[in-house]
Length: 142
Image (cartoon, rainbow, N blue to C red):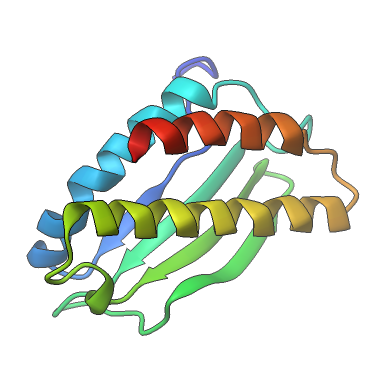
């Protein structure tokens, strides 16, 4: 895969069971497509990929946390990642719009934490352009 084909902001996921996947997966797929559409160019000379991962609790697997945890920077592999915990009460019996709002709000928080980490490590990141592009994603997503 060439760098032009690879998304700069990916949004991986791990689903706790089939019900979690049925409730959340289509929303994540739509979000990934929009991220690939609007967030095309690297926002840093050091980091090629912002890689948040949703950990969606279910019956089989559950991580028992909500929000952002486990921020990790890997300079050698040129990525930064963070886990986003999605408890069952955030998707089970919730409207599709509320699920989308929850996902986009947590993704925004994850990006803020990643940008702050990069700045703390004295790694340049074009946060103005990043959040301008993200605003386009958010507007079309909701």
